[in-house]
Length: 330
Image 1 (cartoon, rainbow, N blue to C red):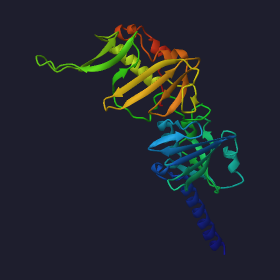
Image 2 (tube, rainbow, N blue to C red):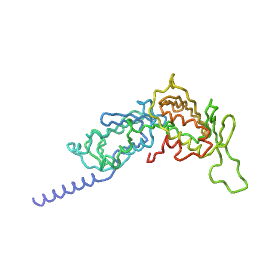
Image 3 (cartoon, rainbow, N blue to C red):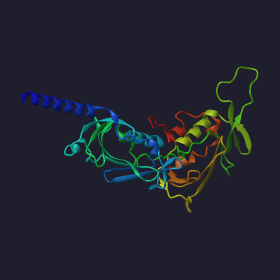
Image 4 (cartoon, helix red, strand yellow):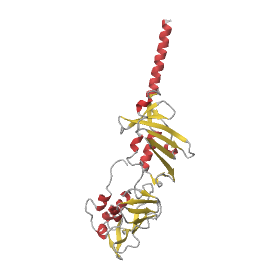
């Protein structure tokens, strides 16, 4: 009898050890291809956000169909859908100890093209803290708690609606290199600028660097620009961010119209930016179908004076001060 009990005890110990090893095994936690995601719903505290993939671009319909920062959203999806982790608890009575009921916890629901749920989960505390690189995750209707080797909340920024792309020229609208900028109706300052190819120099070694220069028309006459000053202006247009979106449509009956900026890229695609003055100024981006506000200073810099493209700019330039460069992953 004693021998039988010892055998049973040994079997139980081996089973327990096997279960511990299984729990500690690193594996895909959700294991769903992020490419299947078409709708992302996130809830945190009393806030809820829904993002929709449309025409290969993520949008936020509840805020005038705002564009979304694709790198952030992709990171969020990868963190939830394709990250690995290990089981650390499967007791429903202790699961709340991992932060699933905290104010900072996330509820995540991801739908496919047929509007079917493919992921439903809660993200608890970060490990070791809120901004730690790992977190706890539990699938809806399950008690098992995973130690996820990712923290989805790191993809969320501090905006009222996380992950909104506030660039006046949305990054999702992939454009080619700008080769012409026109300001219809302007005669007092710069009327237009364009990139002009340089003739090849057949007498010396191949040129290193640009094989073109920038030219401008001012008061009906053509002149050569300082290339770096033009690049500073073009870079400014890609960096400047709006303060808030408005309902798409007219710029406003009482607004003082400043002018129009036409941006043509090397593929022949033209962006039209219509600018109306005021405080704040209002800009309508026709290609992106968005209307947004900028400060009056930011709007004014969209129309360069002659010195801004014909002379070398002081550093930091007027464009750097109005739209500072940001550093970081996103």
